[in-house]
Amino acid sequence: MMISKLRASFGKLENETLKLHDGLNVIYAPNESGKSTWCAFIRAMLYGVDSAERARAGRLPDKLRYAPWSGAPMEGTMELRADGSEITLTRRTRAKAAPMRDFSAVYTGTSIPVEGMDGQNAGQLLTGVGREVFNRSAFIEQGAIGVSGNPELEKRINAIVSTGDEETSFSEADATLRSWQRKRRYNRKGYLPELEARMDETRTRLHELQDAGGSIEALEQRLANRQADCRRLEEAMNESRRLQRSRAMDELKRGREFLKSCSERHDADLAELSRRRAALSASVLSTGDLAENERSYLQDEEAIGRLTREGKAEKPLWPALLLFALTISCTALYGLWKNLWLLIPAALCLFGGVALILRFMTARRKAEQARSERQQLLKKYHVRNSEELRELWSAYQALLYAVTEAEEAELNSRELYEQAKQDQSEIENETLSALDFTNGNSEAAQLARHLSERRAECEQLSSRIAAIGGRLSVLGDPMVLASDLRQMQDTHDELQGEFDAISLAVDTLRQADAELQSRFSPELGRVAAAYMATITGGRYADILIDRDFSARARTDNDSVARESAYLSAGTLDLLYLAVRLAVCELALPEGEPCPLVIDDALVNLDEARSAQAMRLLREIAKKRQVILFTCRKPE
Image (cartoon, rainbow, N blue to C red; front, side, top):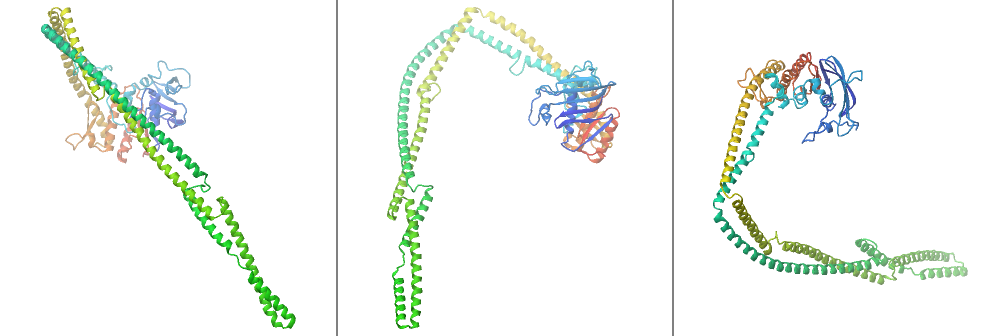
């Protein structure tokens, strides 16, 4: 089988195409470029996508992990050559719950379907193995190079080292035998323990029947005593319930009345607070924040005082009039005496009078402006003078105090009301507990439990009396039970013989499996060692492989093989790559080989071993197609 072309809408691949050829194909690409997605796509085209797989811790199923990022349906084609024919596989998605379920296989370039090939068996027919064997041999995922055991792979190996029968598996046979063992005996379950329990019960019944005569009389006396206890306890319980119910209801009533009074008081305080806040809001001083109101008031009061002083600070007019009179006098004297010196004081007096007039007018204008501003500020507070403003402020302070007092009262009554509600809730819970006459700790509950115990004892005694009486009336003779016991003993001996035979078969099967493993492991180890020696230049010449495919490697200088935990990451990858290649050689069909798909399996190797591994892959590629995805550029 050789894959020639892939087209995928799968994960991050949006209708992308990948062409391949026979031999070694090296697809170099950086991380997160879709290499692992192409690998998963190849497997999906061969074996489909498991729609029943569910998400596990740290791992998404393929149907979610590789859903196309673009939102398009998951689909693709694969062109390949198998058995001398060119075949095109197509998988589409019709229902979101069944991705790539729609399958077709036709001969390339035609619409002729490949007979007998469908979406379920395509991978089996083309590769020769099922999905699980393919995953553990020719399909090497990134980070999953190790090989794990699987019944399907085990059957393949059995077919190689034994008769060629591919229908048997040690794991399945061992599981079947152990299932038969568990059916017969598993701890206290199974046919044998159940039969032994019935045998013990029959022996007990025989013993009881032997003492039945005296037992019934003693049981009837005990029953009469317990019935008398029940009557006494029932009377005491009913009286205790009546008293307990009365006390609980009285306490509940008092709590509800106190809660109601607290609620009414809080409602009254809340209404009073609302009324006082409304009165405070009606005040002209309530224009915003309290601190802002106080600051604004103090500023306005200071401004009113200042403007009052400025409004009263007018300059007198008589000095100017006096200077004008002197000016007139000096002018009159000049007219009489014609003395020029008299004009100088007249001019000075005139100039002084004009200056005083201007000063008077300016001061008067400022005073009028101050009085106007003062009136505006007083009008703001709807008062006529500073005294009324101070009275308004005092009234405002009184309203503030009243609101604060009402808030404190409302807060106190609210806290009292909340506490009363909490207390009432506790009282109701206590009442429910007190009225729980079955599970509580009250006297009535304790009496009820004692009564229930006595009644249960009465029922048990009655049942035992009826059972013994029934046995006596039905069996009549203990020999019937003795006969049943002998039959059960015979059956027990037969089952015990089967159990011992199955145990012997399990041990024999394990010995046979050990012998089979001794034939399989050396051959697989020999082939893996040859690959390991090729990659490491002969350093590791011996590989030991256990049933679970865990491997150990030994160099010529080692006395014992090294466990995988003692190997470096690169050597460990080489070791399991060699085991994988050996499994491919031994477990896959000998006919037309299926491709070997490798996803970044050489990432931990140094340059020398990477080159040796590439040479080995080139040799393998001469026999089968090798598709290597890598983030390291090959040399």
